[in-house]
Figure 1 (cartoon, one colour):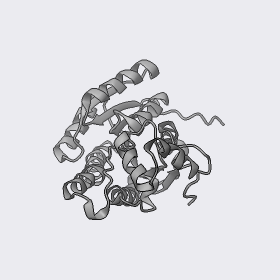
Figure 2 (figure 1 turned 180 degrees about the vertical axis):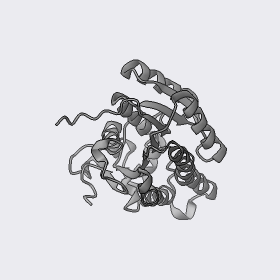
Figure 3 (figure 1 turned 90 degrees about the horizontal axis):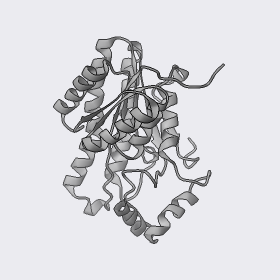
Figure 4 (figure 1 turned 90 degrees about the vertical axis):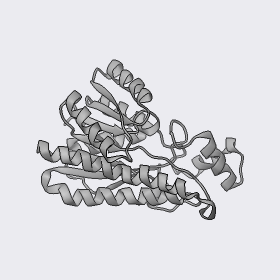
Length: 267
């Protein structure tokens, strides 16, 4: 039996797909034959990735400017995808931020923004896309990108941690609610993606270094030492699991929280 995973003529939407982990997921889906719409606040970055997948993988792509915190923007995104690509089979909720502050210094506006993007954004895009999937009547797949911080709290990172716990709950709720309509929902929990991630910026690394009492240039080595497999997670590692979970190979998998962390949590 062949284990090659093909998603030919499936249509996927990836939020925050213009950079970081999202970009890796877009490439993974496209390499398996899916046509991919990139819903990103940065439309020009999304268009660059569309050009990449169309030239490298021979699939159709679409860049659509989307503010995931705005209900009308999420609904417009669905209309644009339908117009350009004709359907939606896969949603990957990925857009996120990670402002890191000690609890007593956490600015309320940064908390609100984190919840709006990381949690409400997943809810609004899930709501808009599932409504379309139900109209189509052919099922579908939703992946919520959480984090290993979604099952173990992370110091000085309360907003990110709380929302990453939350999106697991969203996926489990949707898995139960829509199983009868053939819609599966799962979460993927990346480990530390220190290179190629929009979250692990130089500023964020500096904040983590301060928290750990080390130099910024020592952050990568510090985190790699925490991983049994001895290396950091890559966008490609995440993409591989996403492609599997949205494929027919995982047709009996729903409501799962899939760690991709090199063995750090082991649960």
